[in-house]
Amino acid sequence: MNLRIKKTLWLLSLLIISQSTVALDWSETNKAVTDDFAIPRFLQLLDSSKQLVIQTKTFCQKGDAEEFDKTRGEFHKTMDAWQQIQILRTGPQEMFMRNFRLQMWPDRSNTGAKQIRKLLANKDIDALKPEVFKRSSTAVQGLSAIERLIYSKDITATDFQENGKANYRCQLLQAITVNISSISSNLLKEWSGNHKEILATPGEENEMYDSHKEVATLLLKEVATELQAVYDQKFKRPVNKRFRYKRAESWRSERSLRNITLNLESAEALFKIGFVSHLKDETLKEKAYKEFREAIKTGKTFTQSLLKTHEEKPEELASWMKQVSQLKRTITVDVAKELDIALGFNSLDGD
Image (cartoon, rainbow, N blue to C red; front, side, top):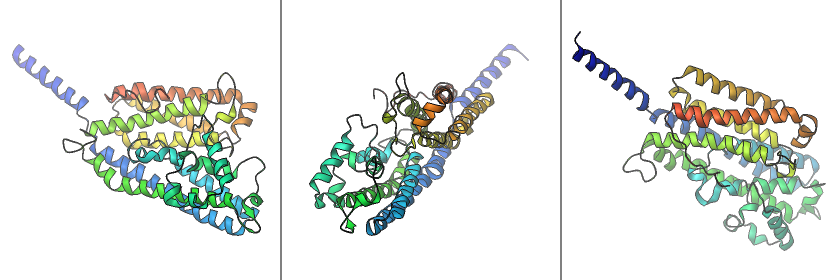
């Protein structure tokens, strides 16, 4: 074989390798993220929020301790559903501040407490009408506000009744649950309709996305941002040089660590659906799998509150934080590089 033929074959091989490396087809996996990840989880959020509305109404009618406990149980189910879809921060969730209206956290200025006290003091019934309430302070519209109402210190079922009827506190509780269900319904509707179409058809006619790779970049950024939020906000903010558990998410209902485990599970699910099939480096793929499995497994060993866990298992808690930190690096550096995706800034940068 002469030199010219050898050179031609070598150039062709380089071209084939280059094309196989960069020309990944993201269209099907992006569609799978919408159909198999986003829509089922928004449906679960809607279903659980509807049950919370029903249960809260029953509690306000009966006013007994048993129904109060059931209301707390439905709150946890709705919060579980929210934590599993919280990872999606962009798109319809950004519109009309829905993320913050569903959960105002972190609340560094304690705005939620101030606004709830104001509502309870004024007892303005008209302020609780759905069309009015959805324009009220974001700090009173969502799950954080419910937690303040039903997990305040020494709160009991009797605090929601007056002369055998639901008082303003209970009416406010009902207004919040209706608002959450309404937002959840709109999110599911948009993810199943217009936003699904936008993600599926990037290009010149699409005002938001130019290519399927741009959509994939956004989705991997959501995974990376969730891991960063877990580490920086949900771990380091309360557990740093000085332990301040009241900075933790959901500390009143003692589910701070439960939230983190659910976040890790949703990040793993989104990663598997959207990106694993594109990873050709089997060693890296197994590394990512292993780090997700270990971090989630560790999280499930913590069954007490963050306060108790920090008191009794500080070393184990610190070890879990390191696992999440390493996982974050694997996704943001190794996986992003392997997939030729530049993550850049995210919604938490500068927060």
